[in-house]
Length: 94
Image (cartoon, rainbow, N blue to C red; front, side, top):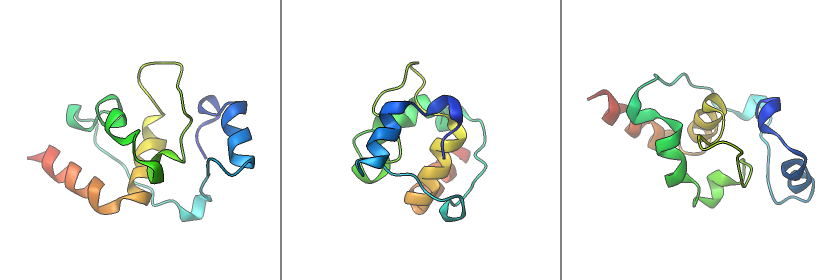
C-alpha cells in the first residue's frame, strides 16, 4: 500500500470501484534502488504514466511535481516489470 500521505479518498473510491488496484504486501517484490540521478522518480514517472498495467496502482494526480513516493514507485515497478527495472539499473550503473 502506498504511504498514508500518498493516498487520497478519490484513489480509494477508484479501488473500491475496481478502477485502481492495490497489491497485498506479500505480492510485492521489494527492492532498494540507489539514489542516482538516472533513477529519479521525476524522470521515470512521466514515461510510466501512460502504461495502464503500471498506472493502475497509482493516483491519477499528485499535488507536487515530483510524482509518487519513491519507495512505492520502485517496488511497484519491480513487481510489474522486473526485467525493465533491472535494465534501467544496469544502464544507470555504467
